[in-house]
Image (cartoon, rainbow, N blue to C red):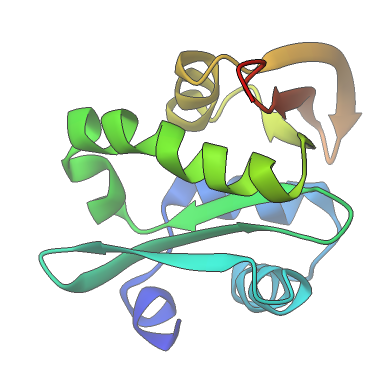
Length: 139
């Protein structure tokens, strides 16, 4: 966790968590997300180096925060992501959170995962859209 913070989170992630107004800064948001996830939290490694982390809180709120390195392997990241979402939805069948629509990397990733998008919210001067990721119906 400290390595990810020392490298620095992606600028779009910083904007998103700062604008949400929930946390005073991105480092607090990152640490709180890890802590709130109660063990349902995973580190993403690229060449053995932490590049991001993701998880879900007990109220089924998914999150993912990462460094710029996280986007260095976009095809591999998108290809492996359904495994992670499957893992999370095996615990929480429906995951729901907000995404800043200007965070195009995150928004496009969620779209590729089949997220369902819902209403928009204006928060901190930015437009956020609620999304849901659900367990596969084949379960």
